[in-house]
Length: 201
Image 1 (cartoon, rainbow, N blue to C red):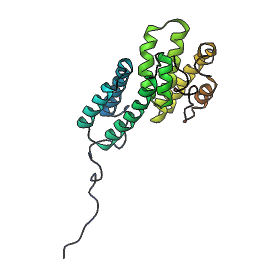
Image 2: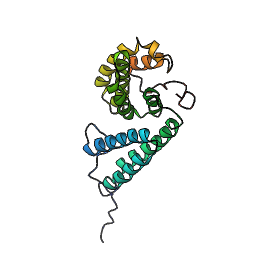
Image 3: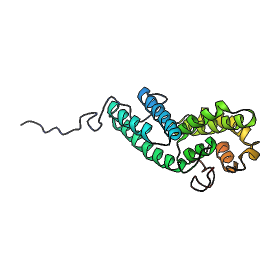
């Protein structure tokens, strides 16, 4: 009598057994490419005011990378992108306020993307402030993937500037909660400001 071996086939539960077990842009090239492509597309969408850049990029990436970990990331990003763009499209043109909307959606790599464009055009203390906010976003990018040591280093540099930038941030948000979170590497990021639906340009 033949044995009825019903043990699972390794990798059968995954759509692509060659894909990594989690989305990890620091170690996995497809993860990094997907993250970067979508982030750039969101920046284009914010500039144009339409969702086509990231909707089209997402559709293409889903075909190129059918593994579940990639499709799940793309779906999650799309939902956040749509909410963020809807808020920004109400009249938020200040890059720092746009960055706040993205931050509150926990789109930290995208915060970096949007603020970096503004940083390149800024000067003086505002340039330093934008750099500090980019680093603060970088802290949460690193923490998400377990790079606590690098996160701590970035947090220290960000806090040095944010601690003396209260006057520049007065019309945006109180930096106290962010400073406290960066000091302890709190894994739960604070919300910046009262919410994108309240303060517009």
